[in-house]
Length: 97
Ligand SMILES: [Zn+2]
Image (cartoon, rainbow, N blue to C red; front, side):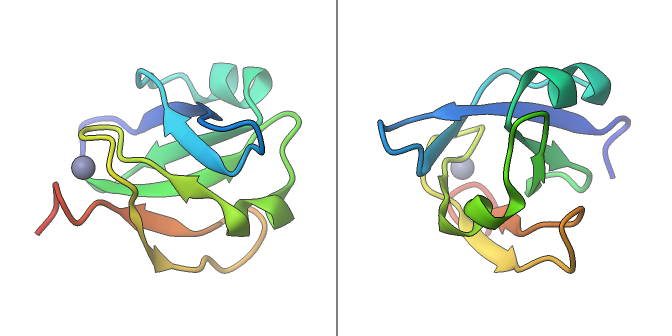
Protein backbone atom coordinates (compact mmCIF):
# COMPACT_ATOMS: atom_id res chain seq x y z
CA UNK A 1 0.00 0.00 0.00
CA UNK A 2 1.05 3.57 -0.53
CA UNK A 3 1.25 6.08 2.32
CA UNK A 4 -1.56 8.00 0.67
CA UNK A 5 -3.76 7.34 -2.34
CA UNK A 6 -2.59 8.98 -5.54
CA UNK A 7 -5.03 10.42 -8.09
CA UNK A 8 -4.11 11.18 -11.69
CA UNK A 9 -6.37 13.39 -13.81
CA UNK A 10 -6.83 12.03 -17.34
CA UNK A 11 -6.73 14.19 -20.44
CA UNK A 12 -7.53 13.23 -24.02
CA UNK A 13 -4.64 11.92 -26.10
CA UNK A 14 -6.66 11.94 -29.35
CA UNK A 15 -9.57 13.86 -30.81
CA UNK A 16 -12.03 10.98 -30.27
CA UNK A 17 -11.41 10.98 -26.54
CA UNK A 18 -10.63 7.26 -26.49
CA UNK A 19 -6.97 7.51 -25.60
CA UNK A 20 -6.37 8.91 -22.10
CA UNK A 21 -3.14 10.32 -20.77
CA UNK A 22 -2.55 10.82 -17.02
CA UNK A 23 -1.22 14.11 -15.67
CA UNK A 24 0.72 14.84 -12.46
CA UNK A 25 -0.63 13.02 -9.41
CA UNK A 26 -2.30 14.58 -6.39
CA UNK A 27 -3.79 13.28 -3.16
CA UNK A 28 -6.75 15.68 -3.33
CA UNK A 29 -9.58 13.55 -4.71
CA UNK A 30 -12.28 16.17 -4.11
CA UNK A 31 -10.45 18.61 -6.35
CA UNK A 32 -9.87 16.05 -9.09
CA UNK A 33 -13.45 14.79 -9.01
CA UNK A 34 -14.86 18.29 -9.38
CA UNK A 35 -12.48 19.43 -12.11
CA UNK A 36 -12.00 16.41 -14.41
CA UNK A 37 -14.25 13.96 -16.25
CA UNK A 38 -12.04 10.95 -15.57
CA UNK A 39 -9.11 10.15 -13.33
CA UNK A 40 -7.04 7.24 -12.06
CA UNK A 41 -6.88 6.10 -8.45
CA UNK A 42 -3.70 4.34 -7.30
CA UNK A 43 -4.42 2.52 -4.04
CA UNK A 44 -1.94 -0.32 -4.49
CA UNK A 45 1.33 0.78 -6.06
CA UNK A 46 1.28 0.45 -9.88
CA UNK A 47 -2.39 -0.57 -10.03
CA UNK A 48 -4.70 2.11 -11.35
CA UNK A 49 -8.47 2.14 -11.15
CA UNK A 50 -10.35 4.45 -13.49
CA UNK A 51 -12.84 6.73 -11.73
CA UNK A 52 -15.50 9.04 -13.10
CA UNK A 53 -15.59 12.69 -12.06
CA UNK A 54 -17.80 15.68 -12.74
CA UNK A 55 -18.80 15.23 -16.39
CA UNK A 56 -17.76 11.63 -17.03
CA UNK A 57 -19.87 8.69 -18.17
CA UNK A 58 -19.02 5.27 -16.66
CA UNK A 59 -20.27 3.47 -19.80
CA UNK A 60 -17.73 5.26 -21.98
CA UNK A 61 -14.78 4.11 -19.89
CA UNK A 62 -14.96 0.58 -21.34
CA UNK A 63 -13.58 1.78 -24.66
CA UNK A 64 -10.69 3.75 -23.22
CA UNK A 65 -7.04 3.16 -23.92
CA UNK A 66 -5.12 4.42 -20.88
CA UNK A 67 -1.43 5.18 -20.80
CA UNK A 68 0.85 4.43 -17.87
CA UNK A 69 1.55 7.43 -15.56
CA UNK A 70 5.18 6.32 -15.27
CA UNK A 71 6.33 5.22 -18.74
CA UNK A 72 3.51 6.22 -21.10
CA UNK A 73 2.85 2.76 -22.54
CA UNK A 74 -0.72 1.54 -22.94
CA UNK A 75 -1.78 -0.33 -19.80
CA UNK A 76 -3.46 -3.73 -19.55
CA UNK A 77 -6.91 -4.11 -17.99
CA UNK A 78 -6.65 -6.58 -15.10
CA UNK A 79 -10.20 -6.41 -13.76
CA UNK A 80 -13.48 -5.19 -15.15
CA UNK A 81 -14.79 -3.66 -11.94
CA UNK A 82 -17.98 -4.45 -10.12
CA UNK A 83 -20.20 -1.40 -10.51
CA UNK A 84 -20.30 2.22 -11.65
CA UNK A 85 -18.33 3.38 -8.64
CA UNK A 86 -15.71 0.64 -8.96
CA UNK A 87 -14.64 0.56 -12.58
CA UNK A 88 -11.88 -1.32 -14.35
CA UNK A 89 -8.42 -1.77 -12.87
CA UNK A 90 -5.29 -1.37 -15.02
CA UNK A 91 -1.62 -2.09 -14.65
CA UNK A 92 1.43 -1.53 -16.84
CA UNK A 93 3.25 -4.64 -18.00
CA UNK A 94 6.34 -2.57 -18.68
CA UNK A 95 6.61 -1.20 -15.11
CA UNK A 96 5.06 -4.07 -13.17
CA UNK A 97 6.43 -7.52 -13.97
ZN1 LIG B 1 4.64 1.85 -17.27
